[in-house]
View 1 (cartoon, rainbow, N blue to C red):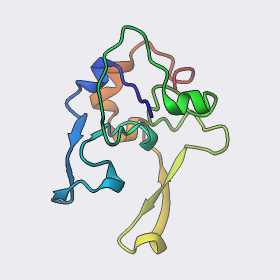
View 2 (view 1 turned 90 degrees about the vertical axis):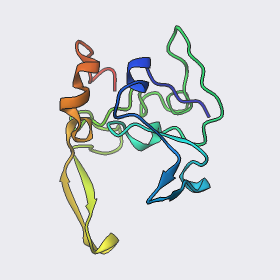
View 3 (view 1 turned 135 degrees about the horizontal axis):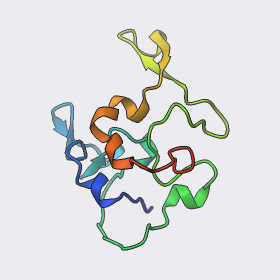
Length: 131
């Protein structure tokens, strides 16, 4: 599988190389041994089980974008104003203290609530076309 980020996204202070979760080593099902965490993007953009890193001059083709370009954009930023072709992204499920029995819907926040920190990365970019 191939994923891609712009260099400014990869170098942003909120972007993390994760080797653990909940105080323990990252298990295989969570992307061991190393996973890239980009909190303002949708989960499919999370790079799991990193094998190599390559810098390119051109935007690379990515697995999900090749599989369904009308459904999965390159940027994959959390944006409540751009619906997935098959569902709304205006709200999201919040799982409360009661687990899956305590699921409520809440408004989705632009950039997953990190707009103040990351919106400047996309200044001048049409976020409806570049989702």
